[in-house]
Length: 430
Ligand code: GCU
Image 1 (cartoon, rainbow, N blue to C red):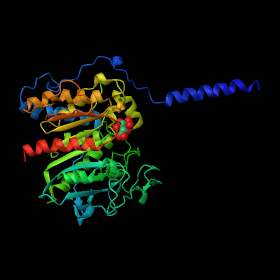
Image 2: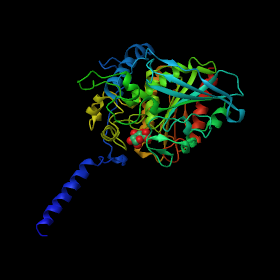
Image 3: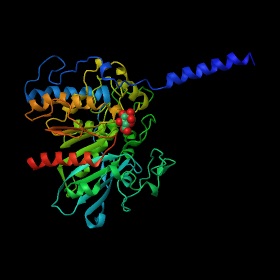
């Protein structure tokens, strides 16, 4: 017994040490502990040339920032696939009690049978003239999860198990219908005259690290027996690419006003909507809901989730080069205000939630504010608020921002603000 005791205790010490090594590094939640930082100036080129006019922004600085984010954070954006095509939409013009037209369209990313594809679900309001302006967003649990409408196809692709949502053995079941309806107020959106288009993000790229083989990644094979290039597209780029393919379809749909499509996303899909809006200027409004680290939040503020956490938990979201910035945020040649600035002069809306401290609400506001000089240079009002607005008091210019009460989520309050924002900009410029 006496001999065994030290062995047991060194084993437990080893286990403790292993657990400590494997534990996610701590996050800071104390404002007073954030080290001072200086943001790169979005209006100064890498060689020091100041950007004093829209043309220099457009022809020099904007492409430079886009290249930095492509090579250092998300990975380069692949071109549209040559084999892209759409199946004929399946239409029910009497959906939701006769108030909407429901369309389901398979978007095929290649002409290879069994190749990757994405199913787009659309609801178009019936009591307004068409084409209708639209919100487009990816969903986390399949199109059937956004509304109990039994006419929505049940997604059959890989999905993260979730007992509460009826997802078992990585597949959705009938019990999954409508489980996320709280985040998609379809009737409310239709009542205000907007169409809604959505697709399951896992159709484009299943959200787990499989070495970049499945989903759309199959279309962009890495060179054999070589490490992934530093700017190889990560999952956020793949999902954003999928949003652009949804836009390719929307441009062909006579019921949709493709010049008025707002791309909206929550959390990792909020990071994605910002990147989609930055890389594809067909998105007329870009909305980030609680996108946090790698989305709207500044990397240089050490508050909540940091690069050290996100690249460890989700190594497949970014390009390989991004990992070099773990605990070296000051060396980033950009910060997330420059991602937001890439949307300029198109309207962009950043939303935070009070209890969503992991996403650093203040860092999201400060990034929106730091994008303001670019918006102003381009002749728009930018973000009116000079300080972070109080809870539930939106500030709305060409940049919109709010922090609502409550947790990390998408609520009717958020949607109402997005629709107000779209009305304001699209009424002014029909
Ligand atoms: C995790 C991750 C966040 C992300 C969120 C989500 O919390 O750390 O960066 O936004 O998942 O997408 O739900």
